[in-house]
View: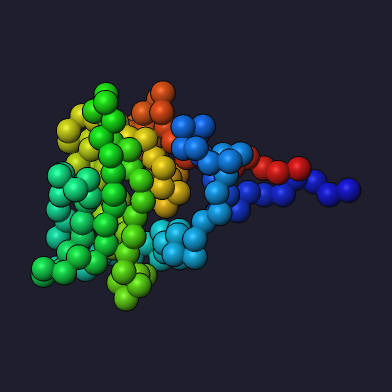
Length: 152
């Protein structure tokens, strides 16, 4: 008999309203790459990156010049909180801290607006777990995805 296994950095559980069978989902290879970047390579972001909130589209974008290099999509819930859905970074811009800085920018913007967030993106969840000063932004009634508990 073996004891409980430690949860991996890729084990997440989703709330019932996410509509996933059993509340679980398999992360894509792109998602695992971004989680690895957040945990293993928290480099400073290039200074020529700009961050823009495209409110009509529900997307925060990271751009260099006029080129979008990363984005974090969101919805606005009826109560005004932001539901952070998914982050993506073009492969050629990974491992440069772009995801980290985009998430930081979004959460700082949410804080400045006095709003809270529900997190459906495991990459954003990983960021908050490693930057606990942002945990106060989690909506207490609808926190979103969480790390999975240890499995027997």
